Length: 207
View: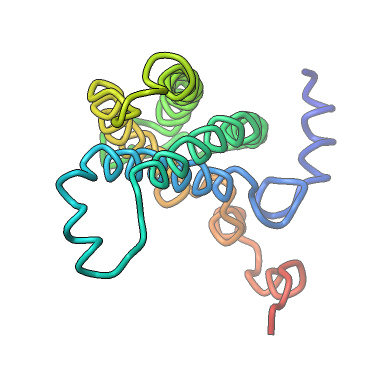
């Protein structure tokens, strides 16, 4: 890409380095996280339902293990589907990012290294979540469709392991924003020595 084209694109971007006011990737990330966490959590509750039945009965909550498995299944499918635009938006916004070349994060990584690992982590999580959805589907409709416990213990352990990867991956993303100011309007304006009052003009007012 020629320097002139890069300058032309840069001139069309807002002070947050994006062609739109609110970054899309961080919002989709939280949706992916929420759906996946709910999916695994409800499957865990469903798997432990025989131990919890008395508690639900005492609280007068009409529930069965199949109810929890239904929530786990549909949330896992939704998590897999939404992760594709999440990763796509992440790479698009990452290509437009212009992180500072100085300084390191709390993990001792420079901005480009942090961005690289965050990108690799995104692709890895996409593959893992998609794989978990396929694995979950086989358990629901083929392997364990006639069993009281619809999910394998290994599946739940794998889901908990992915929680750890999500934490590390999310921390890298948070460091890009908080420590390197990637796609943060105020940070970019301060680095450019511009007046922050421009934010009152470009940012939407909700009240």
